[in-house]
Each structure stands twice: as C-alpha cells, then as structure tokens.
Length: 186
Picture (tube, helix red, strand yellow):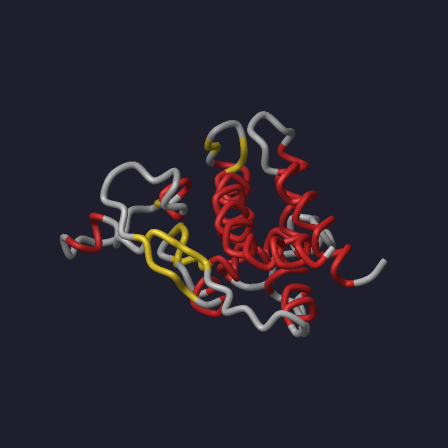
C-alpha cells in the first residue's frame, strides 16, 4: 500500500474507532493510529505532505482551566475532555491553530500533580496500556496514569481513554486539508 492510501485508510480507521458507543478497546487502539500520525520518526502525514507542501495546523481550544486562572492549586484530577476540541467545547472557546509540536505539548489532564500532555497520553496508551505494546509503567507519571485508568470513568471509558476521542477529532480535522488534496489528486 502506498503512503497516500495508507494515510487515507488510517484516517478512516481513526474516525471509526472514536465513534460514540464503541467499546473502550476501539478507542484505546486509536492511540496506535495517533502515534503513526503524530509521533513516528517520519510521521505518515509528513511523508504524504512532501508532494503537497501544505501548512498543516490543528485547531484547539486554549482556554486555561479555571483553577489556574484563579491561582488555585490543581485538583487531584482535572481533564479537558471535549474542551480540547473547539467544536465540542462548552463555553469559553478560544480556538487557536497550532503546529504538531504545539499540539503534542497541550496539557489535557492533571492527576496527582502530574500535568499530562497529548504526547504523554498517546505514548502511555500505546506503550503501557496496550494499544501497541502492553508495558509496565516506569515513571511516576505513567504510574499515575495507570492508576487513573482504574479509578476514574468518563463517558463509559477510563479517564485517559476518553480524552483520546477529543484528541482524535482535532487530529482528523487538522489533517482534513491534506486528505482532501490526496483525494483530489486521486
């Protein structure tokens, strides 16, 4: 399969896995696809975009959590959930286009004083929770995320898995122009 077909099929697979009502396994497996799209040494969109040279951006809601704005300490658990995606955020939407690196640095949750970025969450889901490899948590942050998976449920999924849906929607929207260019060239 050539890179362009793999890219389109990967986006279709990601879109299917995050549909509401799918088993947690499907949503968790989206981390493997996100890894392929965002974290590989040569991410798939970069390989495909060499022929198109599009300036890819991801639109995220950048509003700081109320406890940070108030100068309060972080709660034991906080999650952006759908608030990351401007299309599903409730109130206070401040959309901003960001690069892939800026997207990966977005803090999407805190747990036990650990700030968890999109990169942290995708890597943890892929390499500890089993989306790519079932592993043992070694860092304190990974240990906290593993504990979180058993303690907090959001929308029928573990807290960390639930956020993968919003991340995936943002990634799908950000890569839509490249997909359109690929399909147009057909």
